[in-house]
Length: 266
Image (cartoon, rainbow, N blue to C red):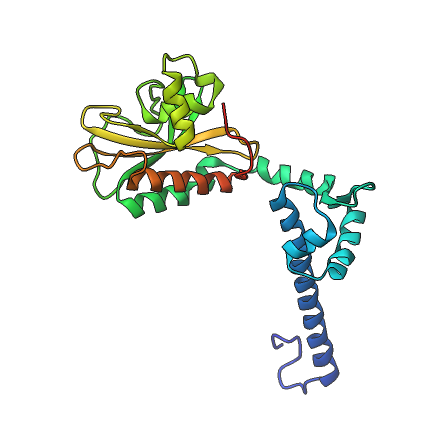
């Protein structure tokens, strides 16, 4: 029996081959239609506010009449809702439910692993991810660079809030981390810059920069930190390491469902 389902040596059936080709093209058209329709949902999600048909179709890159046909189906399926007074479209309850299910399946350690590795490779410094545990900022992932540094912290270590760049990031955005005697002006500056820096961090001769990772609610759920030997380590708030760390944290936040228009204050 051949892969086509015909016995070996049997003559091909032209009609069967035409039907098979038609089925393939029909499936492909269906996939393409779905891809086009999904652009409307993506546009609504990115807008984060209800849109008129004209604006929505422009964002999705399709004619308004075509967008309207898809929207009728989406409204019937609960993926999109239309305000009866303004006529504006927004994501429907079913779409929001699907989104919440997806967000609940996010794992910050797993889903940001590639971000940390890219950051480490890009600046050749040791980096780690910390989350807020029951004892404070806790390291949950560690990526050693080709230039390892001698520090007595690893995965599972709990960091001080007041005297580590990582801890200060949590203090700036997390209410549970407040009350450690940090100057409010320092925390305001960290929030303004989106980065915390520290010389002689964790131990003498070590520099660090740290940036927050936010979730889909705009709440801090982690901090990405870069560590390096203080000699030659750029710990300036606008320096190479800080900019790379901040960019990595922003990418990690996007992977965790965060959108920049969300409010990010403590």
